[in-house]
Structures are given as structure tokens and as C-alpha cells.
Length: 279
Ligand code: F3S
Image (cartoon, rainbow, N blue to C red):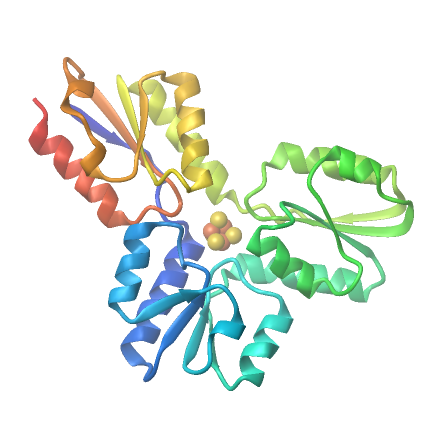
């Protein structure tokens, strides 16, 4: 059976960098190490981090001493201030592309624009960007939210990095009707789109498509959805343990992709299973 790997899959650049930052910090730092929320939404990675002595906490209030590593999503400046005020050592693992969005939002605010952030209000990245955008920033999730906005002289808009470009374009178009001057920054990271395009391209060529990612990873579920649209024999699995040899009976080609929170080790375990357990 031929195994075809999607050209782009697994951890994006920002997540790889944040995981490396945590590992390097764990190797060097004395005292406890924490992240605010899990570094990646993957149980295996969380367990590996715990083995290194790195613990995920929900809030600064729960941490009394040691080092805190900021994950790729970033945090509002108040969180950094609160950590430093408590005497914690802060290591910043924020993705550089997210830092860029935070800086753009702040600059828009300082230049007198009403800042609009297109994204999910409860997503940690959006909470972080809103913090950097200063008071009065508004998060919109859809065109109804834009329709409900009052008119402003100047509006500046940024997007959560993982949003879909066409949806953001529609939001930007609708905002034109809400102001005299609009400044729109394209802050969408192409890692998500590249992974989806590569997954679909692979799914089209194979008999069975595998998407490796946990059920609580929204981008893994989305990858499975887009693959299933072009290949109904698509299976999402968290680990190689969930594979079933019956799926591959008579199959000539199997495709493999993985969500942005899936570690390379999980991908390699699936590939190894396919090589040894089928034929
Ligand atoms: Fe990943 Fe950074 Fe893009 S965290 S999805 S590379 S914005």
C-alpha cells in the first residue's frame, strides 16, 4: 500500500517555536515552570511537558513563583504586567506573527482608529490582541455584528490569524459602510490555509484518507471535514491505537495529514503502523 503524506501538516512554525521555547526553558531554568493554558491542545504533548516539569495553569493567580512561558497565542499586556508584579520570570513564546497583529492593533488605537478585531471573542489569541488594542476595541464574529456597529470616522481592522480569507474580506467590505476611513490589515496566517489545501489535494488522490488529531482540536476536525468532502473514506484518529486494519482491505493508496496541534511523533507512529500492519 502506498502512503502519501500531505505536503504541509502538523505543527505550524509558531507552535513548533513555542514548544521549543518551553523545552529549552525546562532544560535551563531552576524552579517550577508553567504555561497559561496547555502549550498545544494535545494530550500527548501535555503529558510530555509534565514529564519535563512544565505545568499548565489557567491564570496568573494560580502561580506563586518560578517561570511562566507565554504560548504561541500570546496574552494581553496586563497579564505580562501581573506576572512580573508577582516576581515571576516571563519567557515569551508568542508567535512572531501574532506579535505583529498585537502591534498593528496597538498602532491603530494610538492613531485614533476605532479598532475592530475579526475573530472568536473567547479565543486566547483574540483576548490577547484586544488587550494590546487598548480600551474600546470591539471583536466581531460575523456580518450581523458589523451591521450592529455604530458609525465611526476612522475604523482600523485586524483578523485573528486562523480565520478564512474570504470571510475576512466580507467583513472588511461591510465595514466600509460604517466609516469614512477604513484601514484593513491582512493578518491571516497562511499556515491553516496551506494545510487545508494540501490535505484536500492528498485526499483526492487516495482511497482512504487519515487525519491525525484529537477530537477537541478544532482545526483537526475542520481538516477531516474538508477531506471528507472530496473523499468519503476519511477517518480522524487521535493516535495509531485507533487504526483498524479493516479500513485498508484492498486499498492501494492511503493519505495522511495532521492537525496543527499534532506532534511529529504521533504522525510517525501512524506511518509505522501503516507500514507494518497492512498488506
Ligand atoms: Fe501558527 Fe503563528 Fe500562524 S501560531 S497558525 S504560525 S500565526
